[in-house]
View (cartoon, rainbow, N blue to C red):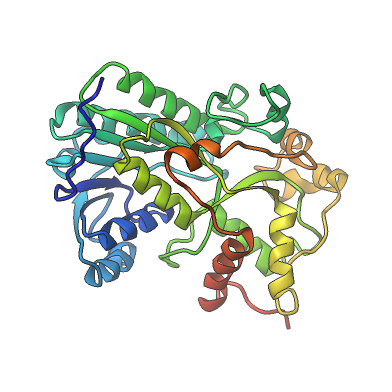
Length: 359
């Protein structure tokens, strides 16, 4: 058994990939609660990546300190982890558009996880590690739902259908999480709590950071790329702000343990588009109807490499359903409405003129 869980909030906490989309909101929560955050980032000198966190720290009781770290560089998390009792490992690449999945997804995810957790084995202060995994480590396609015990994705279900050639992002998250559980099982100094979010939406703290898949989809909805129709792809959605709260509680709640599905809504991409269309459809070319499955099957691969015919067959017009009851019971989670998430997300693109009104 790990050390008895009694986290001292006067000690610093480490957050990997602190400038990221999800991590930014977690850092904000930690700073507002008065904690000292050791922000492990690739390049602390890139002020455009850190200025939003600096601004939050300036108006918060907490303190932020930056440390140069790299997922693939052994020992690079040593200084940042020193003295920390809680480690939040959020850093991992998220993209469906890659040329070399082994190099761009698998290695950073798996080796990075191993690097952080093995450093924890050398850092006597560490009591708990919170790992940002994904529902992608539970499933590849909505049709995987058919093979679950009760027709629902739960924490007991693992992704068995992803590979290097199909859904490599899901494969990377599955391998990284399994690596984490393997390392955790070989020691007794710290415990591991895993967060498995569904698709993350919600406002961006740093509009300069436009590399997330969420941002890419929102932009396509607003710039006319999907004006012929939105694909009815079954998916779960979680607001990034609620996800940050889940991470925070996973770090400090003694009851937190194991895997935790963090997903607020069982939905599909067409519903997301329709919410935005209702609010912004008079000004922006947001779709309000479904693109026919046969058409997406035909032209999808030519428009987007991630939309393979296998993906279309296994996700379009298929229900997605996950059980989030554990998150409510163990982490005390409550989730905000989907409309709030979508409107707040799109508003960031409007305010920063990333999407332009129709003429």
